[in-house]
Image (cartoon, rainbow, N blue to C red; front, side, top):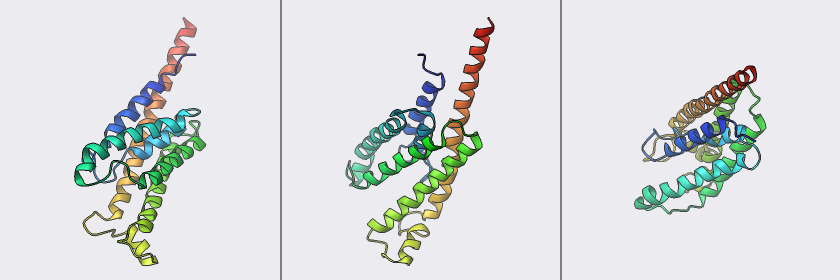
Length: 193
């Protein structure tokens, strides 16, 4: 069976977007990760819906942690990676649930919703695990609003999370739709010839 034309395009976009995760290339929390995981769930079938985003994220995380963050005193492998990877799989599951039959607007909204869910869970985890935050209602509110001293406030992260979730998901959705339309045209042309 011939590989659909949109699969290599999708893999290329996911690889390009994964490279864009390198620290300093994009603003804080303006990340393609949400779209990579969500759209892998939408467009890949079977195990690939889960394995592709995890493989891309794992390889890029190890490279970033080793070549960038290690020099700043961070470990190559960290315990919070388990939570992050569970969320990656959750985003892929959400995309798998929505399927590629959904309209583009619904898929883009799904990408944004998945990104917002990621933001909520990660900040809740930060509140639970970071000793800077009091384990009170006020500490939880602080973890979502002003954050900790020396870092941009999480509200900035939320704005960038929403914008990047929409932008990167829309890019993938419209690129795949375009590739599928071209493939249908080519098939129709061959049938007529």
